[in-house]
Length: 328
Image 1 (cartoon, rainbow, N blue to C red):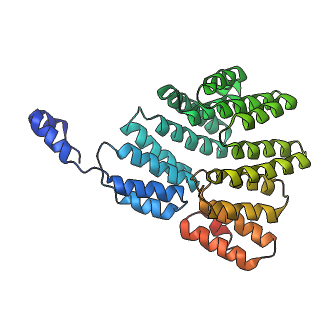
Image 2 (cartoon, helix red, strand yellow; image 1 turned 120 degrees about the vertical axis):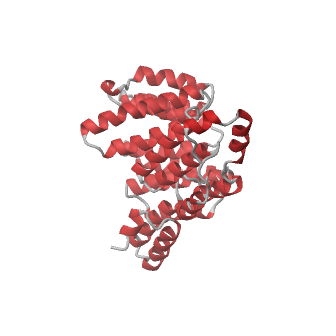
Image 3 (cartoon, helix red, strand yellow; image 1 turned 135 degrees about the vertical axis):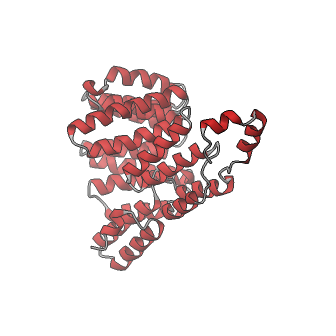
């Protein structure tokens, strides 16, 4: 509910307070259900639940951030940007809202022409910087900022020295992310020996090393070190066996195999284990995993399995374009 400035000036302060308290607030139960649906990869359900939340109220910034995250999983970058921009307008002090806005802008920049990408890149940097400034212990925001500094040209604000400073900040909050960032800095400097050492250090210091094994496997894939890549993937699988809630790493490692077109049966098994395990996350949306699984099943000659996986993807997110494309 919106009041005009004149109305606000005329009403007594006490009555204004009562009216503010009476304004509709988002239902915590509905919000929590929407968040749970997002984590489970149920994009349609999450959007439907978010649509039930009333407008107005002090928690709407969180609801808009959640809307942004759902749209992000669907690769609807413009919709994600609009939602996160609204979240930032409602609560400019929310580190996560700024981080997700930066991520959505970054994805759009990746698809844009040079001048548009340059402009968007400046915004990406500003959002990541703000996210890190607002919460210096937000490890994900710091990692995003560090990755930007590594990947962006200096004219857009990038720089390896800046990335090294972020790695030092990460040392205090997430040692594994700090080592991964140092590895990416070394990669940029074409020092693969130092990069490998840093990636291995990330494995050694991580509390959930399955993720770092998957990252190390991707590094080996870039170098066509197939035996080392395969060994890292097996180590990832073993780590998940010991730490089932790190099942997201199976999705990541399957992505490595898919990218390098190796062992489709193993990749399919890893995706199935991820989908059937307790580690689902919006970082690896279930409908995306099902879409990848459908393609692998087709590749393996399992048309029925492919159809089932595609149907599962569309049941969770009927607007997800890659799942729709499987029909063609």
